[in-house]
Image 1 (cartoon, rainbow, N blue to C red):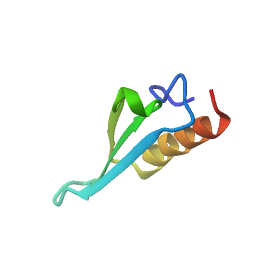
Image 2 (image 1 turned 60 degrees about the vertical axis):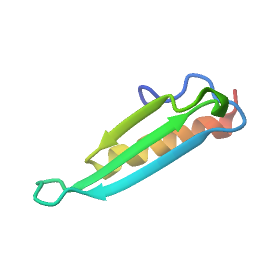
Image 3 (image 1 turned 90 degrees about the horizontal axis):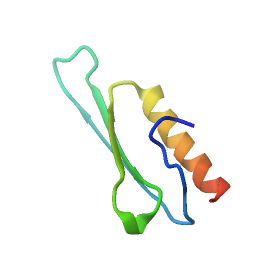
Length: 70
């Protein structure tokens, strides 16, 4: 489990990925991942990444946990 990804997932979750470039940076890609395990509780976690693989790992873990159920 990726640190900070839900401890308990319901049947409906929400994950938003916002991506932008910061020109002039050595690592211009920015990916902000916001997710929640239970939609009614609001956004629980927001993380920003400069590494594509790290952002993808959080998304993959979140999807895997949602598919596994509570």
